Length: 415
Picture 1 (tube, rainbow, N blue to C red):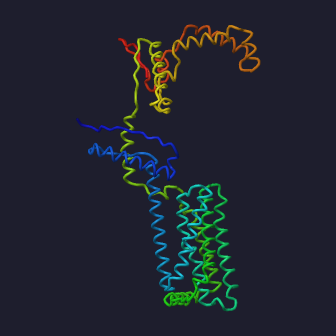
Picture 2: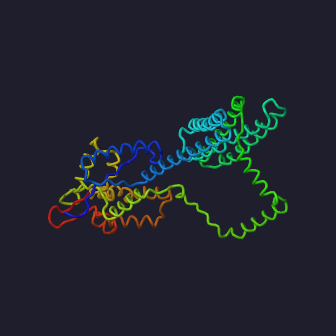
Picture 3: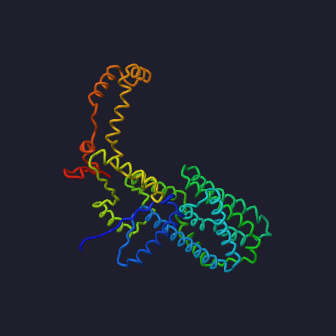
């Protein structure tokens, strides 16, 4: 037997499928089902399709990037601190200010929003380079102005406070956005930097004890750069350079290409994309569904059996509520023949009682007198007439065939 035989399973999530916690719980449960199925049937191929798999994969990739960026950042900071200061005190104080700021900001945002967005953590990783500057400014200042020297505080503290304030002003602009995620990033950044700055001030007496700066290579590099740029460090040269750059920007601005697609933040998983394409091709040719075929000798018989089926399904607690609600049949489009006749009789009260019809139309201004007379004529012409399922589906040819008729019994069937 050739061809592909497949079974389609559709899962419904009780919560937001784009939430990280929901994804983790649901993916773990689905993985256990997959393992059980593949253990019992080793030859089958399991394919997954849906937005949640791409979202979960992107979240995992983002988490890996956070760990990688944080790891590289911390390793670089540790290496620089050891090479320049060659002591554990400055290193410990700097690491404490960074880690303490991130942890404090994390708990603060979690307390305010009850969750942390992955974008907030990505921005949090970038705080490492900013927070460590406070420690570096302190150490270099103390190397030139010891704690007991004159003006040992008046020079440093205003500069440190001004540095913190400029960062707060910059991140506060994000809080003005209507997006809650950007507001969370703003609070995270401001809280993390404020805690880092405060920890630098509190740990200063301990961190700068026996402080020594071993930056001979760095100093040589700085002096070489100063000597290199000193000949062109003139006001007229700087103004000419700025004017040239602005002119180039104005001339080339129409050629600039800006990418605003959110896909730039997400790297598509080629395996998931391949699975999605294969499943889309199959499902384009076959739409899985569950059919219930109801046979009868006529229209009234079929509708009566559909009512009995509905009553049985509604009374069965094992069938989910959504499954009952999504049951599509001819009865959802058209009342039964008996119900149509009954509706015609009930509506006759309105058309046969002229005083009632005139009072209703005049009160609610729904019909003009000539329109009411026309409707009464049409009502009389349609007496004892019904719309059959076949006539209805002939009027909507592209609709699914919910009604089939045969010349030999059973005469009709619907589902």
